[in-house]
Length: 133
Image 1 (cartoon, rainbow, N blue to C red):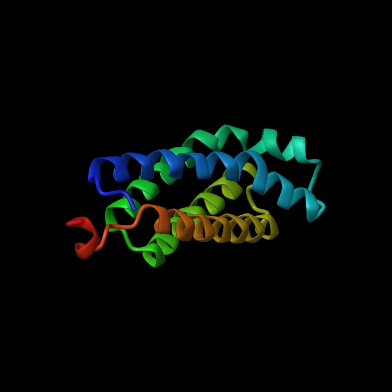
Image 2: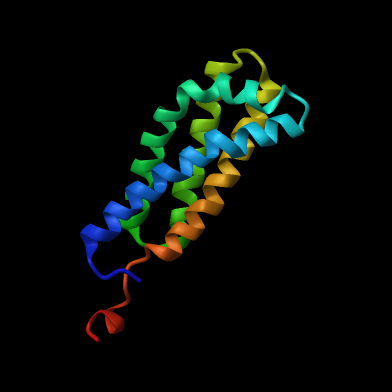
């Protein structure tokens, strides 16, 4: 566990942003290509314009996760951010296609929840008895 609050908050923002970068560059294109949507490279180019938006949203989510400092709440925070980013990207890249909206929202939400749980364990607040020693 990291004792310094500023370091936990900074790492939360940075690692949250990297989570979104991984989501948009690898996870979503691979998942959608496996469902038979398009080729992975084409999907990556269709949603690539929204990567920065997701990175910023996940960075804020990672910062919030580090601020809260509870792993289960971290999963809820980044899972919600992932769900919202998946919906927003699907609405922007594939307007009117509800099957892609459901797939992207589900995959992004699940990935965000797992990432939030992992980051929540890494960035959890130190216990009172450990902080003094």
